[in-house]
Image (cartoon, rainbow, N blue to C red; front, side, top):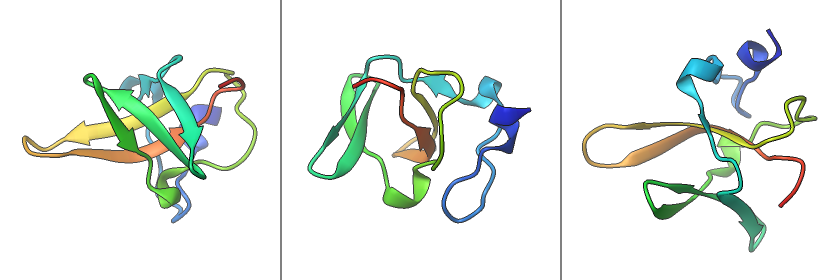
Length: 82
């Protein structure tokens, strides 16, 4: 239930774990922004996609989709360690 209740900063739902891909250790915070490694490329997480609040699962999660041309990050919640 907690994961299904997550929203981005615009209030849009992030979906369930079935739609999220564990970022595991493939993320960092640099230059005041988060970035994640998706398909062997680093992507800057848009500020509005960052989920605020405590991470109850501990590891980072990123919800993203690919439209055939570009990867779009829908939501991101940082893990407890970088």
